[in-house]
Image (tube, rainbow, N blue to C red; front, side):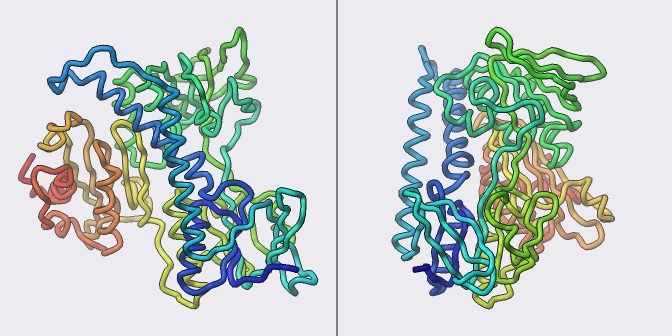
Length: 473
């Protein structure tokens, strides 16, 4: 017998299980189909494990610099096995939490590989899901509405095939039992610079190779340049505007050798390991989309503002629809889809409202348009900047590099974008994100009373600086 339900979700990652919980809260009968563990990439191979490693690296770096705070410590040692064990414990605790939420909300979880099927004896329209269970048996799920949330995987480079030993993706790197002496990272986007920062703090010799003219190509140019400066000051070698040469890669004498062209000259880079970090690809293959009228364009599923595909009863969320491939974006997309299924029209959102965070040391965070994007869209802009070096709490923390930059429309005074690089900015960005949703002006952010001394003061000061009214610089 087939299992019928109101909503089936193909994929139990962050977007999928959040959508499932909200649908259940709205009284829907919900089934999640997941071939692996609930939590998906973010919980098991992305956000959580990588941030656990980054936190350990940050603590290790702080301890080595403790004399700067008047604390003398001898014999600080790194146990990478314990670092990995801590990471695994955090992941498992959160995994158990997700499982509890499924039970609490009476959501049925079917473990197996699901493929969407076309019209059949089970349903007169496409959207049912045939699931191959672990024991080889088949189960069919027949929903009124289907949400596709199958996530993504690391993108590969032609001619450089990851083997998990010498050439790694972030999936492989998270499982390392020992740290290498040196690592080349191809890709200077979010994942690449996070791994560079982490490995450098752990004592690994790191080189970043990035094709674009700046690190963090999707971010404001000033943020990318500042990140380059700060990571370079820590000893990380950075080659921006670099080109991988044809047949550039080989392993010789247990060393990775990579030929690149940088600054008009060819260079031969060598290291123990090579990390390929050039983005992610949506998992849309072999899930049965050919059995539907769902439209695919340039490797992603096409959806409208409510996450509907070209088959109105089939929705898609998360990495498979492209855009910002972020866990919190997928979650919000899941909520948007579920509320639309429930007959509500109000849950659409603007992508400019989604914060983007980089968990390096120091961190970077942004929301809204970069300066270049704002100018390309025809805005007449004004900007304000404020450095962390003028913030009392940053000096107390001992981390005073970086700045906050606010971009506003000179005509309407609306905030167009906020860009931060400095201590704990992944927490500070929430206020800027709220300002975007509320259509706030720099004056309103500047008029907001921020406690002193706090890092949060810097956003108010940067907003006041737009009109030359900052009192601290």
